[in-house]
Image (cartoon, rainbow, N blue to C red; front, side, top):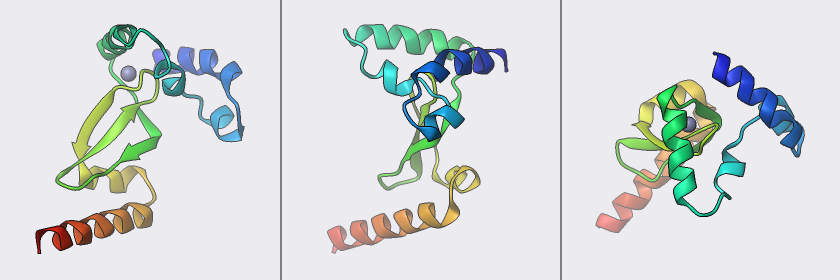
Length: 109
Ligand SMILES: [Zn+2]
């Protein structure tokens, strides 16, 4: 993807560690932009060519869906939780989901 290649070139000089050099991302720059409405504009423009979900950023707080973030604009995208298994370390995802399911069960009791 052309956008991906271009933004990788843009992001590389800003990388602060080995992981960021290997897998450049811009979301951590975007989320510091103020005023915040500029972030919305950037996310809209990024969305025109399709967000690219980050291979490192995800979150799960219970329920059927998990959160992922665009590698470039930090847009949050909800995905079915099972899709995390295909992208991330299966054991880590499974353990987190088990932990949260137990927590929810305890809360209901
Ligand atoms: Zn995006």
